[in-house]
Length: 426
Ligand SMILES: Cc1cc2nc3c(=O)[nH]c(=O)nc-3n(C[C@H](O)[C@H](O)[C@H](O)COP(=O)(O)O)c2cc1C
Image 1 (cartoon, protein in one colour):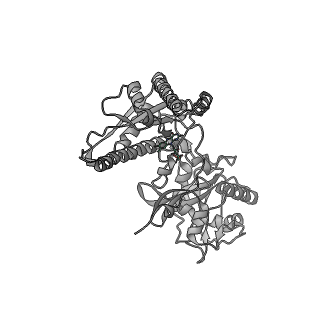
Image 2 (tube, helix red, strand yellow; image 1 turned 120 degrees about the vertical axis):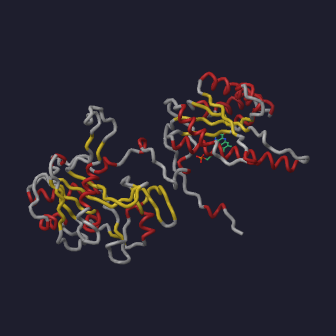
Image 3 (tube, rainbow, N blue to C red; image 1 turned 120 degrees about the horizontal axis):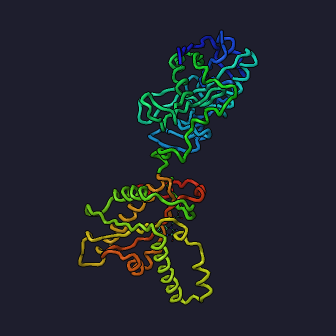
């Protein structure tokens, strides 16, 4: 690898809808040659494509957002339809007439491909094209430019399987070269200087004949993303899952979820939560069979006919479909005892709600691990049977059961709930 040069392209006019961007760049960037990479700020691509909305900024952000990842005050970090996660869903009110906002290009990889072709048709040179936007980064101060669209540029350089200078094989290194080029180009572009295009020369090995996979290849798949959920959507990530794949559950993930569960609030500085983890199919079947017998006995006691009972218990039982079960138990030994029922009942409720807080923590932590869960009530309706089947220590009260596994399908969308309907203010 040799010298890399980054050349600002000045002299472009203010870009408006319908502008021939390739023509303007071809004129302004003299001496474009095979192997050069033309790096274009997405804002002028958006303007040329008419992606300027006469709308309030907040309304435009709403329209561009598919998922709010984090929020503080008016600041929203949101995922767009493209899968990009960025402030204000990429909606920008700077460098555009008052009352208008610039949206990201509809399909930045498509924009890059069209511009590449137009430049090639006009100049007869094989270029790479990147469309860039400025992104903030979690954990790091300041923004850098990144590639949101690419054509004819390998978006990554994969070093996995090669060796470092000591001969140690590299296992994870995939250099996001398209982002690195975007950031380098920003060093000479600059928003206030009004230079929205730069040419990066000296990286011809990254310029490909085909348009290639585009910048979409830089978007990490949700399943591989350890930071999938932000502070604004982590709670919504928990949904009741009643169908699971056969894939086993990693016991270490369950341990981490229990560790999260036991950070819940509880009365009197107590720690009243206990968990029985049923990993073995035999233990699971023994518990569920005993509970089924108890349920049938209850239904007979209610006076149901045998065929009605058979129909009832045949209904899908999510716990039977889960590869792992957790029985949360309440151990309320720290509860205070009062001479009257009123206060004893209140005391009991305090501990029950603390159990609810712990189970919610457990379920959210499982969701963060990519695991689905279903908290069902059944063990609460036959506690002696469960105590016997699980050999529970004294004072452990089963508080339902949680089926855990890899979801067979994503939970169906649920319309957002309006907090106003749940609140009265005094
Ligand atoms: C204490 C408790 C008991 C529940 N019992 C059952 C149950 O017996 N069977 C079931 O399918 N779901 C059960 N659920 C799950 C609810 O049906 C579920 O939370 C509700 O439909 C809302 O869906 P969501 O969890 O996806 O938000 C129970 C939930 C709680 C908190």
